[in-house]
Length: 378
Image 1 (cartoon, rainbow, N blue to C red):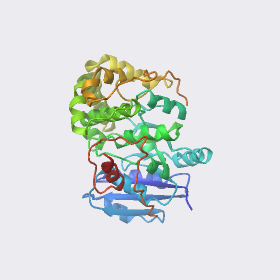
Image 2: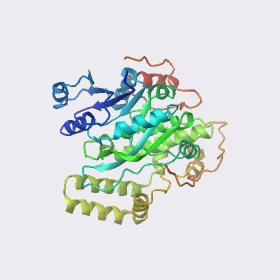
Image 3: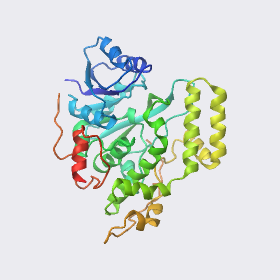
Image 4: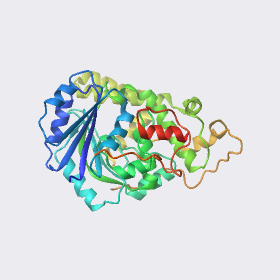
């Protein structure tokens, strides 16, 4: 039996899908399955997939349910102990699966593995801004109130342990970030400290199309984490977001938008427009521009997502107004000082451990078993 399955959610993935699939079929390691869930594509994705002749490939078709529901179905359908995530527009370098299998055989007790990624196609600049460290350093980062930043399509998940912490939740474009903190508190997150993937930024991608919402929802996920750490009951989703929107930094968001535009235009070989986006990023926030350069060139810099936990504490009355709620900022809430070196499986009826599951959250897709369980716990 194979040890790993490469899981690829597909929704209108042309014209990038053929190159992405070819990068998986061309791996130096060959003993794996490929599970593709076509989430109601209306372009040429399904005909292309059906044209492939490879016994390792299994295709599941469904009506469009969204990414979170599709990922949870993938956890239910996979027939191997480990699920290697891959996106339909990204490019896996030939050694990716070989290195992954080497690590998971060496550290089989881990909950998940991740690696580094660089922007793709060639001509784009830089690496995905990712947290680096040991499993304990990942855990300490989360315990300090910050979120790890991990490139989702570099991740390999232990299926049973992922289900044990509640799987994917929320149709909020941050279903991955929400999983990372729960995994870090329960199991080891182990970094493979090398680039194994080309990460494509394009205007049709979920993250690019929803950057503003993603910023707010990332703050919401950090709010759930801090509520857990401080033993406070979080507000319902909509009410919490009304309060959290006041904590957003518009200049920081505008900076990220221009920086993402820079790489997208580089990928299109539109250098004049790319330089214009880069200049706009600098003019919007020279401080953030400088920090991003340091992140690029100094591998030992600690990298995380989120605002300072003290900001949440200052807004305690608005964020945790329930009677009897008490706020205690426990431990050192500064970012840890590193260097950070580096088959139809049924889903359980209770998906998330009570000590880790958030108690209040938005409705996810009703087609996802894990998401439905999470709703029931609200």
